[in-house]
Image (spheres, rainbow, N blue to C red):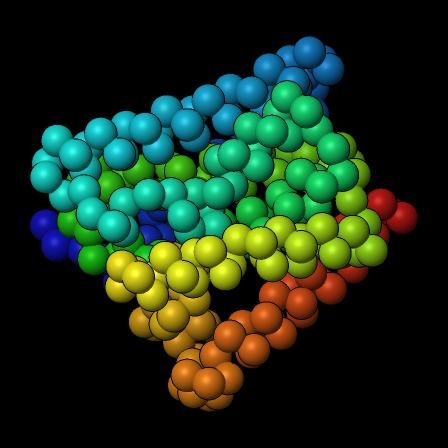
Length: 228
């Protein structure tokens, strides 16, 4: 079977199933003890790491490994942010999870860049499960108000991007890849709308503007939840 299209029956089935998973995880995590919650966080990290290693091995074994294979997308980097936060939680990792990992993985699920992969193939299933795990890790922390970050902490995310984006942009230019979608957008996604509206020259600037708007919305919702 070939790939799927955004919001077709296959995509919607995954989104519904993942939503149910989120509900069960949020409910269960709420009633976990502190030790159980910490164990849950570590389990999610090790599952993510296992999935990524399995994917890398799969690509090697099937002779599909290429310059596109390293985990250099924002969600791939999220593995290591989650790992650090699972064992050494701090304000920086909390901020990166809330401002980058959560919205990045959510947008990826809504507008998958893996739609061309054969439905129910290894890469198809891996991509949905992987991004769902990224999101649930952050969601349970937000729900239980365990993610210690405020809007003024956004400079930490900005600094992270200032360090990583030039490196990945250079990698993209050298190997003709498109990690973090810095060079071009994914078709039929909001990034494509930005590219069409502002052109190649204004794409990254408008991209940055959208990220800032997302941060404002996220922290506004977080503040509203905390005060309610």
